[in-house]
Length: 454
Image 1 (cartoon, rainbow, N blue to C red):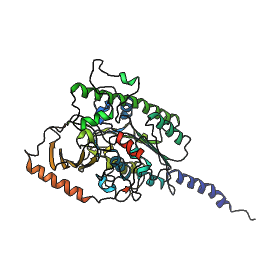
Image 2 (cartoon, rainbow, N blue to C red):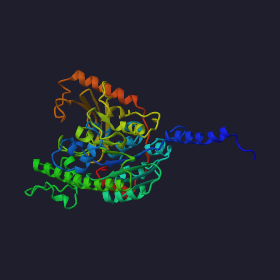
Image 3 (cartoon, rainbow, N blue to C red):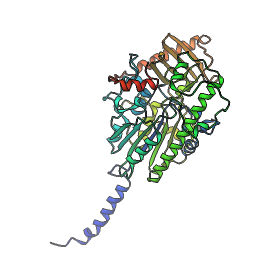
Image 4 (cartoon, helix red, strand yellow):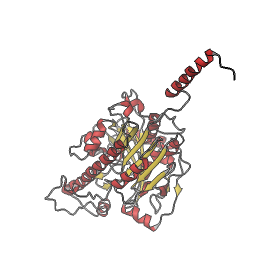
């Protein structure tokens, strides 16, 4: 073999070095992506957390997480039930477009997430992610289509946060590829049954009323069969806060486990809820029956170690915005047809233009049958009740954030204009068709225990 000319022999190491440098800067190869962890806490109101101004120390670990995160102080769900809200989180679509709405038949939660819908897990799988999900809520289980795109997705019937944590940490142990981990915790969903020693926290030793936090009692309140007084409401709030405190400690365990596994600096972490809970602010209890803010206003924290400590963001945001936000953070082009907008621009500054309208829907046949939708826009909120009786409610949120003074009669022109806007917005959304399943007797009983069946 003839020896190479001296100039070429000199150039080869230089060319190899340039190729290596190009790879290091992402030229010609997809850069390494961070992991994604979504922690969804079922039935968690934002206003029962310390970072949002709550005075009871029910959430020290969540509050510490908020100090490291972008905090969305006016985040809203697009539904007041688990199935529709989680489907919106997974698809970036409003409930009427992904189709997971109760059809008001004799079975609730019958509509499932159809295989035609493209989920976050499916999008991430296309970019090399391995996805794992563990849920304590049957409504968000594989039975109803929520496992689409996941390598492993399991309904954990025990509802124990510790059990979910153990499964999650085992799934991602030693991960060498980027992963997506979804955990759906059931505390503080009813029944409110905090374990010891949490049950002693903030408890009134003189309370002698009948309320235990059992779901059947809460159903009686919804049905108007059980009258409650101020001390009873405080009892319910205390049990709920005790559940939150119990979960907060379990979250601390999970976050410590992720850090010990070396995932603190390479993971985008999201803390969110599917909907809130009512404590007689509007005469009832539980969730799914109304669209007031105690049902819709939920926490959203996004911690991205690459972006520093974050900031507190007051612009109203929507659950439908979360998926496009996560895609941008992970460096993935948005999927076609998404109905939300990325919130990443809010990381740096509040916008000059007003945010888009917040549209929400609810339909439920259980203790009561309801069908309603709402639109929040420019400081005003209109709720259109379609069942059991057609009516509208109008609230000025800047002067009446608790939605206690219905102004529909005093402001008929505004109510009419907002009703037209609500209907136009709803009609602009394509309607999706849910899949259908027939519930087993065991599934029906479990959903009845959770308040989702008659």
